[in-house]
Length: 404
Image (cartoon, rainbow, N blue to C red; front, top):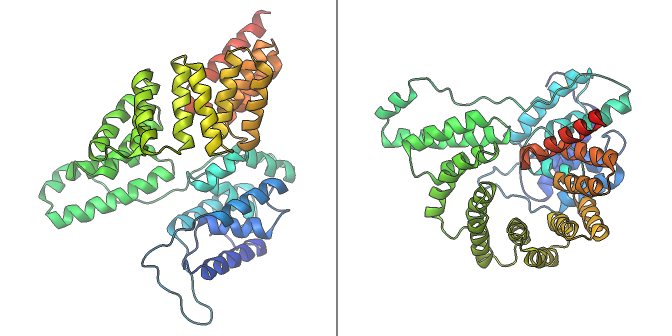
């Protein structure tokens, strides 16, 4: 760390340590540190009370991972190790500490760091409408500051790779290959979590050169292309994984998603239906099937799937939103708006819901509201998840404004 931790942070760490020991987990990870912060402080972290309470409830309800082989602490004041990902989170937090000009490391720096990492905490924050940009704005507003604090994913050190590595590995024995494969794949997983897609993909390629049937490296390679919305390149990797695990619903869902994004909605529908037959109670699969029905203009079937998804999970935000879109398309704007608003009550970071509210506003010729909703969709990373539609709509509105 750059400087000393604040009293608040030391208290949060003490809470995390106690939480760990009471549950015989014997480690401290990022989620435990966040729980310590949320459960100990309400005024210093720039999060509304209701959102803070939801986060605390979620963290308490987590099925905490029992890490096999973790050493059992001994003595009157046993030491509990901090996990590697939590150490990286703390290192990145010191970057935000420096950028904000603080003399001590505070809980706010930790939360900014968590919001820069792809993990469960980030997704839960987003469901409350809290992303890096919005949280930073709240902090700067509270401090009456205009500091320039750019988004920064934690820097990590990985295994050094030379240009001659493909030649060198020709001379590896079986044991050397096994060790290298394990090390490269472990680093690749970490790089993906910290948003370094290119290096992650490169390490997966090295793994596959040594072990072409390495299922997890194939899967991770598909993920690296999917997050860049290059579904044609993701598809071959997912298909290879599917050959080895033909009944894995997650693999089937990823395959279906690729085909859907590439425009083959009939085949995507069949793949989702097959996945649902293997896991009939999945609200996510039911929602995905309903979405494909929209693409195929099977609106009655789509509503049926969304209703089933909601019956299995009353907080399936995407099902409420998608059903609202169908009702909007069928000419029931009031019912549509009610469902989309319900979706946003559950997941405030649902970019697609803001896009749908923009479409409703455009139907009412309310360009100001439409523009506001499109900016919100943009803020919650619509482009990264769904494509360029929001940008195109904003450009169209901008053109209309200049020509009117």
